[in-house]
Amino acid sequence: MTTAEVSLPNLPQLEGANFLNLLIVDDERAIREACRETAHVLGFNAFTADSAEHAYRILEAQGIDAVLLDLRLPGAGGIEALNQIKSRRPDAVVVVITGYGTVQSAVQAMKNGAYDYVTKPFSLDELKLLLERVSNHLKLKTENRMLREKVKSKMGFGNIVGRAPEMEKLYRIIAKAAHSTHPVLILGESGTGKEMVARAIHFSGPYHDKPFIPVDCGSLVPTLIESELFGYVKGAFTGAMHAKEGLLAIAEGGTIFLDEVGELPVDLQAKLLRAIQEKEIRPVGSTKCVPINVRILAATNRDLEHAVAQGTFRRDLYFRLNVLSLRVPPLRERRQDVPLLVGHFLERMAESSGQPRTFSDEAMKALLAYDWPGNVRELENCLERCCAFTSGPMIHIGDLPPAISNLQRDSEKSDGQGAAGKIVPMSELERQTILDTIAQLNGDKLLAARMLGIGKTTLYRKLKEYSSRE
Image (tube, rainbow, N blue to C red; front, side, top):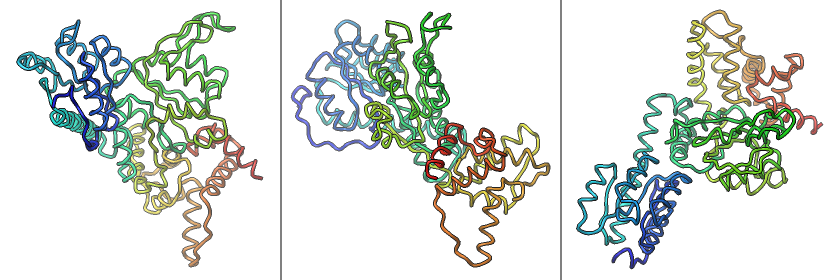
């Protein structure tokens, strides 16, 4: 059976083909459709083009992982099209389609960077095996890239530290997301390292040499967010003496990371949605749209589904951003990583101070018992505080912040009395820790936020929640 006479069997979906984009370039519609349907069944996201020019436009708009390329296309020659594809997407796996009796052209194509070739007419079984090889090849490349990152940092993935099972799962998702161009929504509490995850996705992918632009949506003044993201033209408002490019334009070809995207005003959410859908922006004060090619990564510590239900976050934007999602586990869910993180931070601090330090067994036990509402950021700030106020090489439990040392002493006292102790909800522990820290710092909320390892916006929001309960 040839591809022009195809009827699709029940094919199993390939493990590892998820998130892989396949471009099929052939001027014969029947072959394009047969290949596209087979690819869909096998788990690929398939795009089709009937000419080289059409293929180039798709390559610019989509993150293509693999290409099925007919060497006999109208207009541009097959080898020329192959060279163009490889120059635009160097990491793409290209399989060429050639006619019977013209294998020599396929050999030339492989010398120019093609991965494999198939001759017309080909059967569905041949196509299935070919796509399986392509999928396995891409999966192996992803695993090798992930392995290289782990070699660079034996404690985790890139600059992310952790070996807990929850983190190993996260690394696998990061490796897959890095190979895609879809938007990614990164969920997690404040201080868990969502920006580090976003950086790992960007710098592990094929566009690692392109810009990575982080934007803290929670810290920008609402009236300035639009001009920061979209830019403005000269004279757009008072003080606009010169035109300014927006961050979405500056990130051209790379990644923009929208941290705390849940804090965006609703009216700006509509404009961001249009920019994602139409791949263009309109600077403030301009009547013309500017095309953009940028990947969107977004993060939030809020429950966006709840925000959608309340009407404070647009449902359509939520679905646009949530094409791929991952959750960064809080530190209390991976306590076995605390000693690893402590060693990592102390080593880095010793490099700048020249004073190596270590924790006593009692102090380490206290760190392991604490729930870290501010997560990794709070742990890092705690260690910086300990190093700043400790002159000796050993950090003892008395050198720890009161919220941590008192918790450990209370626990030991309770154990000594043989009492089970009262079970306190996590939310109450977090509330008490925040309020105690502010009290100990004589009401300095900004310093308290830094000491707790949370953003000032998060601190003020939590204080507002606490006051509303009273």
